[in-house]
Length: 197
Image 1 (tube, rainbow, N blue to C red):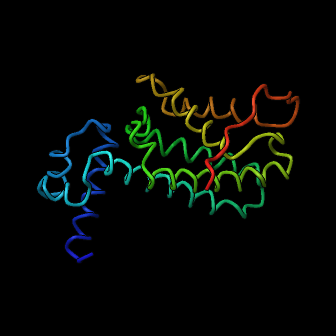
Image 2: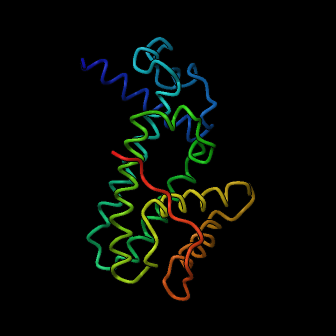
């Protein structure tokens, strides 16, 4: 990719990420292009559809969360590391309006996004496995469970515009207490399974 094309792509991704964070994914391509200081045609030269642009933004966000999980894998306290990962993931999502919106079906079918999702689940599983081994969480909790629970905590607090900014911490604490092995009872259903590679 030529240097000017790479620069334009970076400008578009930064502008789109900022617009989505502030206004959600309904923001127009024209608005994104204007924020990047580029024409609409440049957007479509890099991303054939708006869904491809959204997939690129969300995939990058998931990869950053995966990197954070990998950074925490060697922490001395596996339970604290898992809780820190979950807290950071909730904070990341709550800071970005587009993270709290229902995900379009096209995004779930995007290969780049599904690969980033698989990397995040694998990184969360590595953290969760250490926490299970340390006895910090129940033996039947998976990394996939952790990813879904992070989303659940995020969604729990989004309807309250006037809520205290740290209300999510209450629900994360409740969720994490539910992950602890003390007084655990068998779960009524199997965990979701990652897609085969």
